[in-house]
Amino acid sequence: MKITSVETIQLTEMPYLVFVRIGTDAGISGTSDTYYTTDAIRGFIHQEASPVLLGADPFRVEAIWDELHTHHMARWGGIGMEMRALSAIDVALWDIRAQALDVPVYELLGGLVHETIPTYNTCAGPMYGLAGFNRAGEGRSSLDDLWAQNNEPAKLAEDLLSQGITAMKIWPFDRFALASGGKRITAAEIDEGVRPFREIRAAVGNDIGIMLDGHGYWNLAAAKTIAAAVEEFSLVWLEDLIIPNDIDALLELKQSTTTPIVASEMLATRYQYRHLLERRAADIIMIDPTWAGGITESKKIIALAESFGRPVTMHDCTGPFTLLAGVHLAVSAPTAIFQESLRAYLATWYPGLTTIELEITDGRIRAPRRSGIGAELRPEVLQRPDVVRQISE
Image (tube, rainbow, N blue to C red; front, top):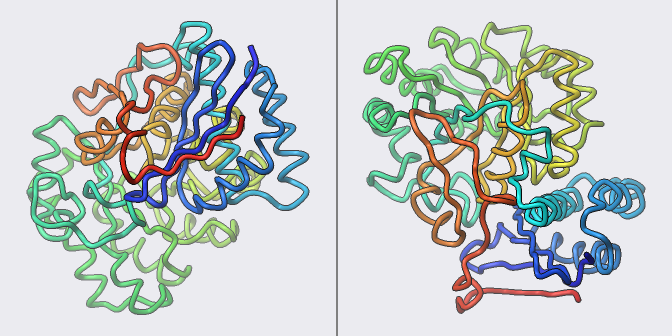
């Protein structure tokens, strides 16, 4: 089997998301996606990656990863858009290999450890990531969890529990970071920021787990203040209150609170995660498979985290193939504790653009049964008037 085409597919409605599809002479195609800097990602894929891929054996996943990383990325410091491009390519190659062998991807990762994996709902609306994160809520609707987390947090928690979802992630402090650039937070802002946590606990007690995301907006001093303010609510974790580019600062934050620290989808490759783990600066390790290096590299990060006694949780707030890659990794990893998901995405554009089918019952995602990654783009996507396709053959 040989690779015969490398294709990028984008919709102008979703300028930050790009799909990557790799074709073979056996008629099998593998598909993935990734997020951010999509113009640059397309350029890297067609200029740098395609000459390596075309004519190559798609089963040589590790060799292709090493060739692209060592000779086309690492020498130039490539851990940003180049890593996202390599990640998407890698997931598509795993999809091809698993389809050719007629097994789900997790069977190639050692097989099932968990029949199901717990999920939590990231509380955003359907349009949250289509044109950039942290949009204002679309409005008062059953699917706009971003609006609900600030305006009706208790009702949101009750609604999630009624659907069997037992954990939720919110970010009520983000809006205050815009005023100060994340350099300080006032007592009044702290009081308003903790209000959703207080209302959720008053309504449902500890029946629902709550995660706090900071999106890397705060400096260390403000992050410590926020961490202290929410400690009484027994959160599942604090996520990215600061950018993890200073691991010692993250360790200082961790030492200031009893709430577990999770870090971070902002890191890429085992080399960045190694420093985090060696400093014991996080309690839980979060990985985004289409940002950190694909399935190939995520598997290594999971093993590295296990050697430090750290559980892992898989990130997705971006695309359906990223979600599926995370699920395959999670169900095959003994130390996996969560797979992120957005009910708003799963109810709207994920199935609208792809054939994704996930069984979610009582807050747990069942391992996919289809061969390969578990989905493909719907044919009608390629007929949309806003589709932008580029093919290297």
